[in-house]
Image (spheres, rainbow, N blue to C red):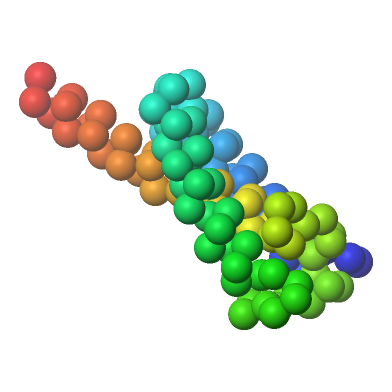
Length: 108
């Protein structure tokens, strides 16, 4: 059952957010260059901060090795952290985009 405790929810979060966009919200955000640029900016901050917090030589945050798949990149960051980060940031941006589109639709 390795990876079930943290990996499965991380994967499910990504799948849920993507399915929500494709089936319900349909904002088109994932096709926009600005979205992907925003994600690069997020990674630019996430990597050094998360890397410092999860580094194996002196971790501030410890993960039960039985609950992650064990793939860490770069600087000892568990891959699951990137999945959760993607899902969280994408969900927020999708909700903002949906609200913006709804507001523009009311003005017309």
